[in-house]
Figure (cartoon, rainbow, N blue to C red):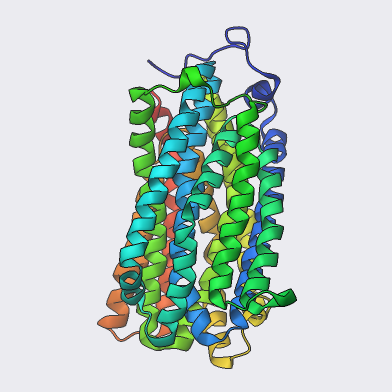
Length: 463
C-alpha cells in the first residue's frame, strides 16, 4: 500500500488534538507541542548542571569517575526516552493517525512490558559487569571507586527511569506533551534537592558523596513515573490500560522490534563514541579526563533541549504519516531540524567564545579548566550539525526511516574514534588534535540524515 493515499478529515473521526497535528499550520503547531518539552527539558538540563556542580565540590577523582560512568546513565535515558521510547511514541501516533485506537491501547501494554524487561536486563549487566566496564573506559584507583559508588545506586533503581520515560513516550505519542512536561519539572526539583542534600549533607541528611547524586536521580524518576502512570491510567489523554486490549499483537511486536531495534543502536553508537573518546583521552591523564568530561557534558545538555523539539516532531511526523500526509511530514522534519540546528549552533559558538561560562562553573583547577576550554573552543561551533542530526533522528522515528540517522552515528564513530585513535596512537597526536576529529565527526553526523531526507528516504520507507 502506498502511503500517499491521504486520508481526509471526513474519512476518519479525529480528536480535536489530532486535527491540530494533521491540519494546523506547521510552525505554530510544532512550537505549541515543543514548548512544554523545551521548558521541562531545559529545566532538566539545569539539573544536569547542578549535578556537575555538586560533583565538582567532591574533587577531581569524583569528577573523573562521574565523567566515566555518566555516559552509561545517559544511555539509559537515550534508550528509554529517545530511541525505544521514540519509536513507541511514533507507533502510537501512527495508530491514532490512522484511526485505530484499539491498536494504540495494545501498544500501552506492550510498551510497559518492554520497559520492565529492559530494566531487568540492564540491572543484571551492570550488577555483574559494571566494574569491568568502568575499568575498560579508563577508571582506576579513586576514580574507579567513585564511578562504582555512583553507578551502583543508579542501576539498582533503573526501572524508575525506564517506566517514567516509556509512560511519557506513550502520552507524547497521543499528543499529550503537557503531562510529561509537568512530571519532569516536578521531578527536576526533587532531583536537585535530594542530589545536593544526599551528596553534600544538607539539612542534616547523610553526606553520601557521589552516591547521593545517584539517589537523587532514582527518587526523582520514581516521582515522575507515578505522575505519568496515573495520567495514563485515567485515559484522559486518549489512550489507557484496558483489559480487553491486554492481548499479544505480533504486528506491534514486529513493528516496534524492527524499527526500535534499528533506532536503539543509535544511542549505543553515540555513547560508545563518548566512552571510547574518554578512553583515548585517559592517555593524557586524570585532569584531561575530568576536563573532557566537563566539555563533553555540554553534548548531553543539548540532547534534552533538542529532544524538546524531537518529541514534538515524532508525534507530528508519526500522526501525519499514519494519515498518509508524507509531504507535510517532510516539511515538519525540515522545520524542526532547522530550529534545533540554530539553537545548538548558538550555544556551541557562545561557549567557544566564552569557555569560562561553562567550564568555569565546574572547576577551579587550571589544568582541568584548560582541557575543558580546549574542547569547547574546538568542538563547540560544530554543534550546529549535532542539533540538525539529532533532531532528524527523532523525526525519522516518526517516519519509521531510521537507517540513515543510524548510519550517521556510524560515520561519527568512524571519524572520531577510527581516525582519532589512529592519530593519537600511531601519529602521537596531542589532545587538541583529537578534538578536531571530534568536531569533524559531528559534521558527518548532521549531513547524512539531512541528505537522506532531501533525497526522499521517508517516502521510500512508507511505500
